[in-house]
Amino acid sequence: MEVASDLLDRQGPIYREDTAVFVSQSGETADTLLALDYALENGALCVGITNTVGSTLSRRTHCGIHINAGCEIGVASTKAYTSQIVVMAMLALAIGSDQISTQPRREAIISGLSSLPSNASEVLKLDSEMKELASSLVDSESLLVFGRGYNYATALEGALKVKEVALMHSEGMFAGEMKHGPLALVDENLPIIVIATRDACFSKQQSVIQQLLSRKGRLIIMCSKGDASAVCPSGSCRVIEVPKVADCLQPVINIIPLQLLAYHLTVLRGFDVDQPRNLAKSVTTQ
Image (tube, rainbow, N blue to C red):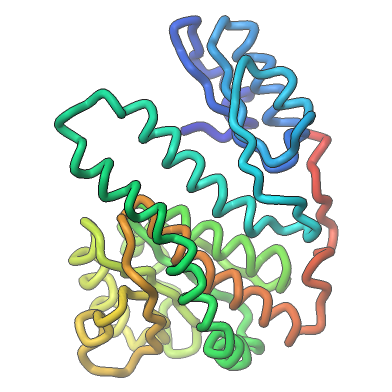
């Protein structure tokens, strides 16, 4: 995985035997297109994933996937983000379709994909709960979001949404790095969201929660349904329960409450949800 602008800065190694996949909602992101030119010059097979038919990205790549999420009006991406996760999971399934050893996992993921709409509808019912949570956070100056494994991306995206639209300082962090600095910030006033849904990292997230609680942290924990007592036995934390799906698809479900939280924080703070300050829908400059 590479950040397009950083790949260009480092002139990272790309060879003609490589396949490079470029992801852009608009298909016009300048950094991504320049990285695409760099990959094409080096002879790589270039694949595009975009939401915009006829965009520069879709025209310049050798092949690709239109995510078909529909026109996104707001500057801060929501449905394009979740659709990109689904499309990339499907791409991985297609690439690995000839491996018999992974067949049970493939079938579990495919089953999870078909159940995503009903699970997303279920998690959208948390809207009023997220509005209540937003009202308790509206006067906070900062927000930390800890994630791990697949949900490190969820932590980054959730914090980015709060940053973009609510204009509130927020940071998505890798939970494994908590002791290397962020732990110094923990007190009873700083709100911290910990994503601890059931996956291979669950026991490690339980440990993180215990360490934060021992420092009197103000915790909001996202967990799988039925796990409230496992993540917070003392009952002193705010818990958000979400449906459990295949681990690689869980970020699609987990990001929705954080998107709702960012929306309600923005409204309560009196800002425009669709047009955040200083941001444009398509970043066409470096």
